[in-house]
Amino acid sequence: MSLVFLILSLLSMAAAVAVKVMFVPASEGINITGAHVFFTLKTPIQDLPITEAQVNSWCVILAVMFLCLFLTSGLKTRNISVRQLVAEWIVEKVTTLVRSNMGEFFEGFAPFIAAILGLSAFSSLSSLLGIFPPTSDINIIAGWAILVFILITYYKMKAGPWIYMKSFGQPVPLLAPLNIISEVATPISMAFRHYGNVLSGSIISVLVAVGLTDVSHKIFSFLPGAFSDFPYLRIGVPAILSIYFDLFSGCLQAFIFAMLTMLYVSGGFPAEEYAARKKRRQERAEARAARANAKEQKAEI
Amino acid sequence: MQDLDIISVNIWHIVISLANLVILFLILKKLLFEPVNKIREQRQNEIDTQYRKAERTKREADEIKAGWESKMATADDEADKIINEAVERADRRNEVMLYESREKADQIIRKAKADVERDRREARETIKKEIVDVSQALSEQIIGREINMDDHRDLIDKAIDNIGDLK
Picture 1 (cartoon, rainbow over the protein chains, first blue to last red):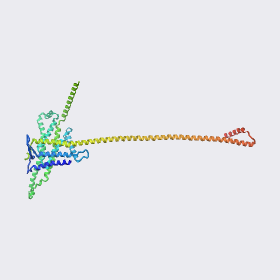
Picture 2 (tube, rainbow over the protein chains, first blue to last red; picture 1 turned 180 degrees about the vertical axis):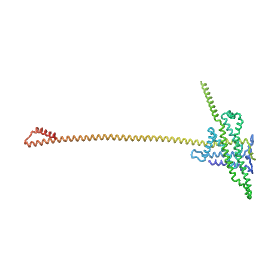
Picture 3 (cartoon, each protein chain N blue to C red; picture 1 turned 90 degrees about the horizontal axis):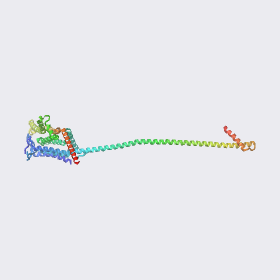
Picture 4 (cartoon, one colour; picture 1 turned 90 degrees about the vertical axis):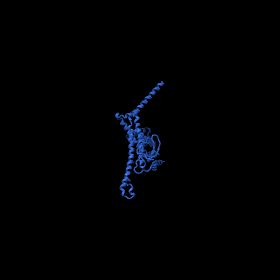
């Protein structure tokens, strides 16, 4: 039963590859463009083109979902399987990471951080299958960064809007414009860092591959016939680059994005003010309750 | 259909991506974190109950052991007491028996002495009587006539007493 989920998980990635093979025309030469548009929906404000990036990220989500189902099927309390061990390892690692970086208060962020890590890493790694990595589309990362920005602002506002507004005037009110810029710069820098790394990786890969083809044509032009056309230098060298740009950079950017999310959200949260406000509210509620009690007693008399 | 430009901002793409992240967050929460945390909690509970059970069992075992040990200790004391009592009783009985046997021996000795005394007295009586008779017969033979029995008896008795005293 659990194997079905594993197969479904692999199938959803295979579906992304199949869509790419069937609908995306093969490009010739150096062709650096964004995602291929399958069709465009008419929507208000702006037309919605359904592109490879969208399809691939849905495929990644489906794959992760089935992977979760695969890992968590048949959980037991003893004599656990390797599958369950992996699931528990993931949960424990992410929870520990979140707790050590954000503190006990933000422990509920663990699934969110795991979602960022999983979605980002799997999206970047999907380029290994030859499909368009969704993380090299600015819109995808921008969506995540905006969500993170919303979270940062929400937790900054927890201690009251006034304290949030006042934090822009720190340390001198003169610096307020700079503070606002840095506040807005946070999601933009996060988005461009991640997007730029993945996109530049694939661009460099393409450039290197094309360059190596040319160089190998130059070097091996003395060979007769079809032998001279074969790009010998493209054997192996791009693979090494791919290890860095696809594997290492993809995982590293996912980790960086998750770390920054944790640091910004927990760092912006004014814990002391929040505790003070909570205490104030509690006291006020108690006072109100006491007053209501007194009134009731008076009424009874 | 053509490709997108390499940088093309689309509001809906951003919204979809944001929603995707939220959806994946919910998926991971419901399908991975909650079941795993639940099973871990369950395991923790199981371990706790096992520990509690083990501790309780150990405590009970300790209690039983302590009970047995104290019983063993008192058993030694009891055994000592019983032996002491037995020894005492034996000693007492021994004494009693010794006393009784001594008494009996004394009795026997006393009786024997009394017997001997009586026998001696009887023998003395008979010897006396016979001596009187013999002396009477001898005197009759010597003197040749009848002697007054009563006069002579006193005389002879006195003589015999004198002889007995001399002895």
